[in-house]
Length: 70
Image 1: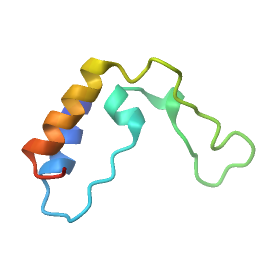
Image 2 (image 1 turned 90 degrees about the vertical axis):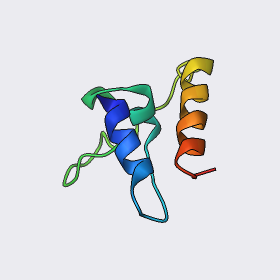
Image 3 (image 1 turned 180 degrees about the vertical axis):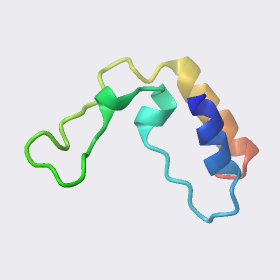
Image 4 (image 1 turned 60 degrees about the vertical axis):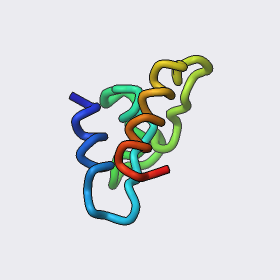
């Protein structure tokens, strides 16, 4: 389902589509970068080496090209 949200953002008429890498990777709440109104545990998530596979990167590129975002 995360690809549906990515597709909706890329297909929109907006000039910019900002898609967090966590969405491309299909990660859940464990990868949340920030929880508003909280202190301490924000901005700690890091993408691990190898998480962005060639398969995912190719799919990202194809979708960006399809929707004229390259």
